[in-house]
Length: 267
Image 1 (cartoon, rainbow, N blue to C red):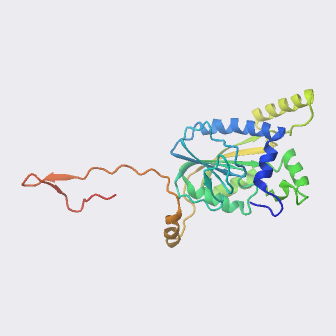
Image 2: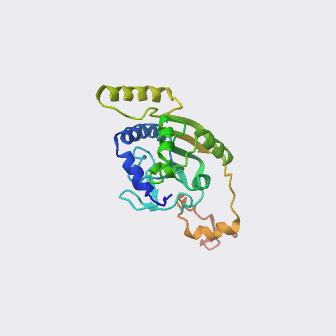
Image 3: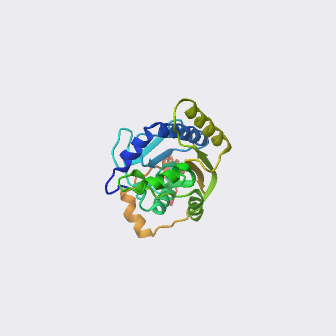
């Protein structure tokens, strides 16, 4: 994720601190909140290219993990998105906030996210739409090697849908936000805001950002048993362990409780 001449995390956070980024972040949070209202479970993970923009504040899931490659005030897990130190099938919901946009191998990142998701787990992929005004502007600015957008590897919604299908995930919906980047002042800016609000309501596919909602249906990737045994010692287990059931018993002749052969407690 780190460019040769630029710190992508810092640059993207700086971009989101501007007017256009703030407006886009606000619309993204509103859309994500609506989807997360129906996502339940024990654990939620957000990963991506920012460290100060949590999108899970209103989630009913209490245990929330915010992962990034660099430390930050709200980061509680330092990890690469393509090598998450979490057990397979352990996370109930994942928010991938621009995780694929600046990844060296976005397909590998998606495979890793699919691995840690539980069956029927919810996945939200948030990415820049290459077929938008913002996408065209990013491609033009990406000509300069000193620009954030030089390291941008856009993944279209159609391409992402194909990848998720191969990984055994079913796409539920795709939301597009902010078709027109903010510009101007006064009446012009208010007009742009109204146009974007209208586009958001009608979900026009020219939005600057898309939010793709998918559900993991099957475990499409099977790892070799030997490799799994090597990794299990360094992975973080998140799935809650059920309480052990009582040991079946029957009274003996002397009234002492005896265990039934072959039914010892196992923990």
